[in-house]
Length: 293
Image (cartoon, rainbow, N blue to C red):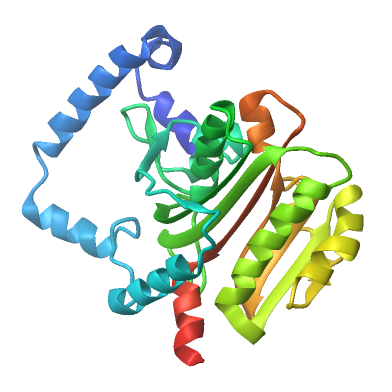
């Protein structure tokens, strides 16, 4: 993106980059870009729309049977514990939601010209909502959402798409010492995923940084679960994304999703004592697994 962008900037008059970058207020920039989009849309033909529909991976429909997907969604919501509040998220989030909260490169996000971005991960948005509810005085916040998301990075290989659906959980509370609140949140998340996946559940954890949580996994979390919660010491994916402990969620040989502790609500609230656990699975992958059972 960097080299391509520089070539484009060399085609515009001197000073334009600075004006668009910092010289205009957000509302002025939005006005200019909306006008540009209106002008470009005015010359689009139906034939061009058809061609884009066929060729653009961002707009092509998913290949999953929506009737089967709805059954999976219904099962997930029905089994969700009462303590988790369901949230119907917007398909848009504030610009910078992922790059500021989760340090994801903005080039992986579909940005809009209205100061927003297309939703790319419900856990980021749920973490913001959790922080809002924590600031309002709620002692512990547990949220769940089911959302279709779009990711802009190039994808290659079977089962990889520009847009897909995720079912996500986010829990946030203030540290009570010795990893106790983290253990409580882990038990609630893992019990739910085991209930969903049954005996085929493959739940794992990886410790990226030593903490009291590792001790609580042995003396509190594992005894509270009916499922095997195995350690995966070879994993390195997410070591810069998760804080301390990461989760793997699968069924049999199929990987369905992951999760772990993050610093998101701590950074959103400016309080290092805040703890945040996220976990999510692909509902389309889960639907495929359930259809084979």
